[in-house]
Image (cartoon, rainbow, N blue to C red):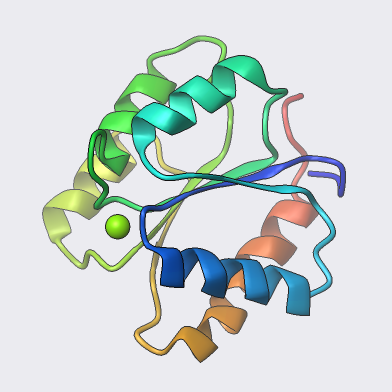
Length: 135
Ligand SMILES: [Mg+2]
């Protein structure tokens, strides 16, 4: 993705939103960052904005959780090519298997210590800034 692509963060936890935003800033990632608090909000956002370069997806959210969002997005011809990476506290095997079955591009476990976000976000950022997008 280029620096003009938006990074869409879908998460209901304010502390995690802050930690990811701070990590992106520290890494000098200049992409615009949009935040949605649940899957339903994210689907609505995607309908009204240009495709983001990357969606960082929490799994445990109210209203519509991450897996339901993913199922909806991957079932939509217009949205299915958007890279979605799970960023979650869930270590449940069933979540992981289901997420990959639904076409998740990566599955990252949130660090317990918010300070450790930096290395996880750095890895994701370098990878997706190096990777070309289909749009
Ligand atoms: Mg959550």
